[in-house]
Length: 324
Image 1 (cartoon, rainbow, N blue to C red):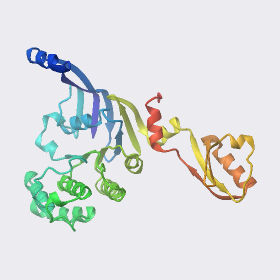
Image 2 (cartoon, helix red, strand yellow):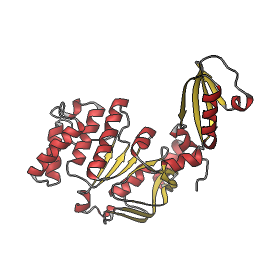
Image 3 (tube, rainbow, N blue to C red):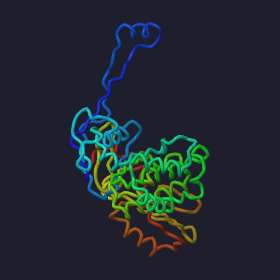
């Protein structure tokens, strides 16, 4: 479905000294330097996969998506999506993919209604009217945009524009979705609606989805596989469970006691936090069952939960740890 081999992208950017002298000298001779945004990137994505593509700001995520969708031409390497070379921007290819950016979910004139924008998409992508009508009802119901899809786009909230943008991108049934921060700036309820929709859309259509996001909830709720990029290089490609197991081989046991008790030294040294009568204990994965059984047997426990470390912590650790 999607193959990337030794992909690279280098930009030439102008540089000059600050101040009047630097400004004048740049008129005579403009100096440039090369900035490498993506370096030797290789991976494959199968049909129907939903893959998280994450990294810090400037890591190369958006540049990669732009090359995969055909907006940018690679400086090196090779990309094949659905059998097409994206940078050639073949008409048949553009009808099979969609790039959806959370910062700019809609590209229609602001005075159009969402319904007008959907009909504009029908004309641009030459969709049969009868086929369009059938898909329209399904997408409108799926994304729950009927209450406001006849309002001008400029009057809609960011969350409403995001859902309308998704509708416009999906009305021609793309086989591959490139999602660049689809929940950015949305409140928690709107984020959850978008996540639920993407999950259902993937299950219903078997569409391939590559998702970038700074919200780890997007990745952990939607993706079984994650690729982590940093400074243009791929640091990790694999299952989320494998990543967590390698980088955070421990869990937190959170519990509270019926009455004040003194824990023995071997248990006390595992305590990382005491707050509002609750203890948080950091325990290696191998010892979680035995420590949990000991607490429940030897102490009067009011409640006890076993929690994974925050996924954000795992990603931060990845930037300073070599993962095989």
